[in-house]
Length: 230
Image (cartoon, rainbow, N blue to C red; front, side, top):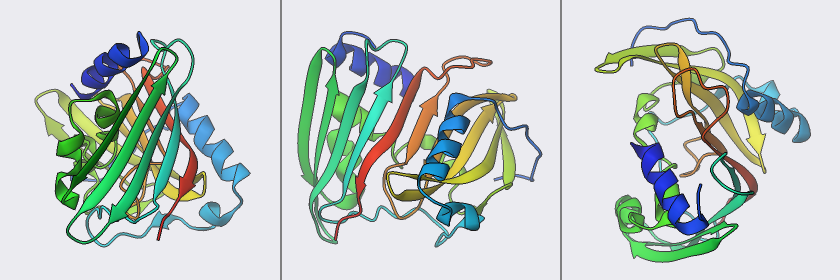
């Protein structure tokens, strides 16, 4: 549902677009390769560690001056799109966020001011706001809430659509943001990949696979510029 909504809104802007531990097989995907290359390009700091440290839950951690720029690729986009997220100001009670999505055929911009826990809701409805839901507003992040993301950790849960499994495959660095790469599989097929840290409301990398068994992501977003802010 989330992928469909994002793809539809991108098309409108750009003219197309807890359970027991289990053992899973690492997928041979572009995202895995990208994560490895990112780690190599950014030094050995992430490689020397084996886990991302958590406080038991995900923190939004909005900070004034926090800035992200992503390259977005999809078979349904003619070329590469870019996405920007900037925290213009932030206090404990109120956050102002600016977003900008640029595709080959159009631009969407939005600025909202809201309490920290209402930012995503205020952004909903526009193309740039919908891309923001790929941050920690995504339902798939609830699957790792409270988990210790150490390389090799894996767990699964069952639902109406079958078995959903999670596995932490590596620690990587994207544009200076260190994060844990985890993969979500449905019935054994890769459905979602992301690189996350509780110190950041947005991921270093995220990819969707539209159908079970697909080898190429239907949507891929990689962080290429990052500032932590104050």
